[in-house]
Image (cartoon, rainbow, N blue to C red; front, top):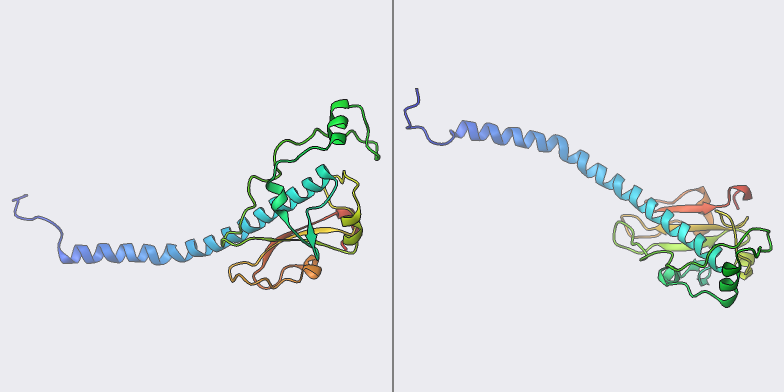
Length: 195
């Protein structure tokens, strides 16, 4: 029977409880840490893909690439609200006007391509490159309307330095994969046969 004299836990009960909690932590924490690293890698690739798609949309909507210095793109323009040209407004209003490739021009865009340029999961900016054999011609060209992929011979490479913060991938060789712990996304026209 209960006599009311016993209050609390014995030292043995507390020790056993702590051992059980410690065993559970030893089993679960390593898996959680591994998963967090894999989630960061997936998140980095997903953000890189988002940036590459926005660059391509920018190219399709404006007929030009973001400003480039040696193949490295300045993507700050992706967060700016587009200013339609008189020609774009006229074409969109007409609706029946066809572009040089015979397709109907899309509506004039009113929102920026990205609300903000995302940082990689480690808090650092991505590098966005135009790569491939036809970059010079693509940058010089002002014809819009590439459907869903960069023109043949051009790729969009979005690169994160990964956990160590050091870029180790050569943009010119990124089609073969990323070096060390770099993470990114490479968007290329599937019909162009690579570079």
